[in-house]
Length: 377
Image 1 (cartoon, one colour):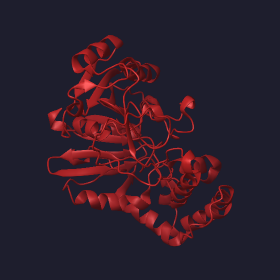
Image 2 (image 1 turned 90 degrees about the horizontal axis):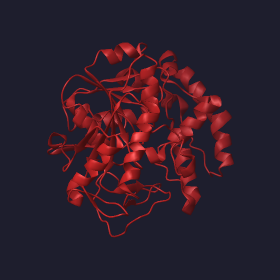
Image 3 (image 1 turned 135 degrees about the vertical axis):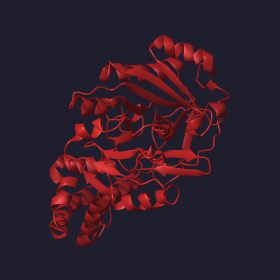
Image 4 (image 1 turned 180 degrees about the vertical axis):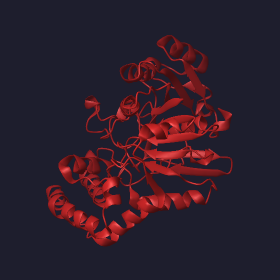
């Protein structure tokens, strides 16, 4: 089976929970296909809890991770995440990756954070993890792929990093009015990147064969539909990646494969962690352990959906536009916090009424979550 887990809103909907649920049984591969280490997908297992960034949210269940060519891994942060995960799970970590993955560099993170700080009250809502800057750098001919890292010596890689710093990074720092350079030891950094790749990641030349080896392949999306780079109406408070079904459809299509089920995840209320238009309802107070305030995204905000129909139609339209043959599912989380109601500006809608509207609109299945544990879905 081929699944895609997609955030239906601004992110933070519960995609980690959905992926954990879909990988509870069978031999699973989870494909990270958009964004990078900015993701914060939480999985709870009774007395254990972990926030996944580059590893898949199926890792507690033994699911392997695959970085597709459209993913932007941060090798510098990888070992820290793997070591932290080992403290809460004995499951071995297996990471496969496309050699065509462009990586996020420390330059990108630095410029990203400084630019967002300099925007002051005009922040875009960045996570501060360098994804936007890594994308632009790669598009401008200064990308560094996993394949290049594998085939280069540390000295060769350090030379390339120095060239990127001189020919690209310095001009960006000057253009944006950033007062200081990063002053990176390129040889030391190159060594760290090569060591992380060689120690933890297996590069895959035959992607189709990898997919066919598993019982289930789950595409784990980052962020949500309302942050998709194609949402020109919401610019500049969007991301630079495809947060919808575009990547899974493209990747599967290249191998003559088709998506079976598109799983759109939503809370029963609306959230936004980061700058941008948002109809906040200050009477709503919910606890969120993962999305703590930071200098770039500030506080988590809570609100109501404009309408149930808009919420549902957003998912159905994305599936119809990208994978018309797939089934459409809604994965509704945090039902326990709203007494089985979906909160909208038109009034609170109970689960039975919500389900009826969804079925009429073309939704095939609804998963209901009233706790943090996937086994209770």
